[in-house]
Image (cartoon, rainbow, N blue to C red):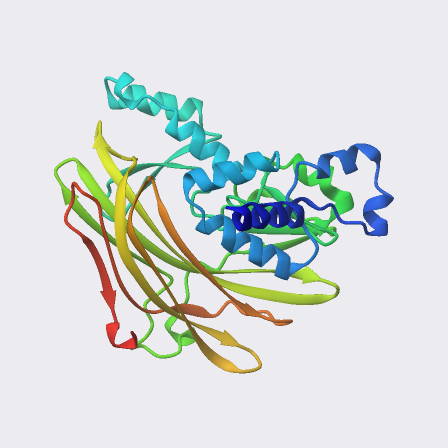
Length: 336
């Protein structure tokens, strides 16, 4: 317990320490005060380490950690709002739909390839969901990052107030600005950019298992995150496996809490401009914990270079909850 408390204390200090650069010191006092509500990192390594740790936390661990440092990430705020909803109070889908529309700052309907509706939180698929604040921003060095559904804007911290006023969810709706660097997400990788066809599994994979009104879902995705620090461009390739139990109500799949068990094994490929194609592996195991999610994240840094060429190479995963058969996601299992 003492080691856990020490870890949380050190992590809190690294996450919330405000940059001491001259540019920050010269900012207006109101802007400096605003920074106190923004997760702040000295460099990309500190950001990456913190990101993987918060993504790995259970719901209760994340709440305990954030409350210990007086911080509320936008991801946790959305999830707590979601978990506070009494879904039994809605008699019809139209009532639920009206509620979601009235609370669109937190909730969104998503549709899968089969046309089934899911009620999710906004930005639930963003890797920065437990880093960014309600204005969808965080700070690395002297740069502010503003997160959008389809990318990120990077700018000098002196432009904090201007970025804070942008409320569009799409980066394409933001007017061009010489003070902003626009970084769009690469969601689709072409075959020409793949290492080879045999191990090109795309950038997203999903498996679902149903039993009546209940469902267990595994989702794996890979993406890149990059920026600029000390005149160097850096790239991180992130891969994340998320397991969620769901239940069907009023024709919509909604999140719920059940005991989750399973094993995750994932391989992904990315192109390093110096070393060529690289392959990373990660895994996780859950003996059975009660929660509304189980997340297994991984990151591979590509130091001082930019790359957006990557794909899943293979996976051997299963996840189970008491009311459904196991959900199984397998491809190129010989890699493991």
